[in-house]
Image (cartoon, rainbow, N blue to C red; front, side, top):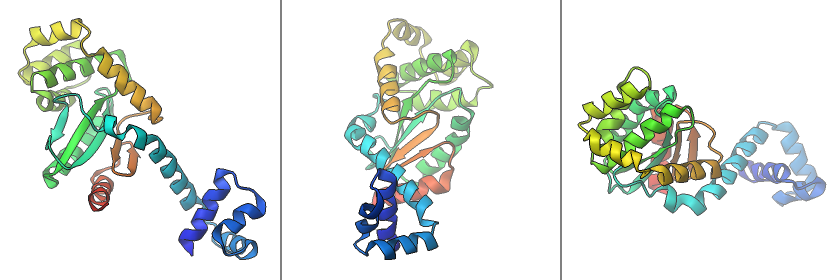
Length: 231
């Protein structure tokens, strides 16, 4: 009954009015209304489900594009059967905090592919670091740069170059590619995807039918991965 009545609450939030909403359960208006009044905790649960459904309605038409990485901008198993998408910004402290969590998930799930969407929304330096990350992907050194960049003390032209050197990039080739505008279309597309999904901050994670904002930790992401694996 709880699931049915949660659906009724969704109908209310979605705009059904009066008896039309109460009848949505098939249990009759009086019985339905009495249950909801006695168990108002169903309403927040239903609102959460409504938000999830709304997000999935935006994700599904874009899923193939979301899960198709920029070549080389992948962590974990590039051929993995499960895909976790992360919208990330090198100026984001919560993204830095989540790096350890993502690495743990990769270690625990050999079939996990992590697609990093560079989403430089916090500063001009964010965009510069994102361009260098894509240059690193072109050189087969994305993971090394990604880890080195988050290990830096702050985000500046100097720390971006230091991370690139630590990752072993050919800086002349990387800067030439950046100067040619080779990565602008990819960054613009990432912004389009993020805005289409109403992602306002980083990190944001998408796996299966779950979307999580912020540094939500290993446990919640592990549960989402397990659910996606079982679906």
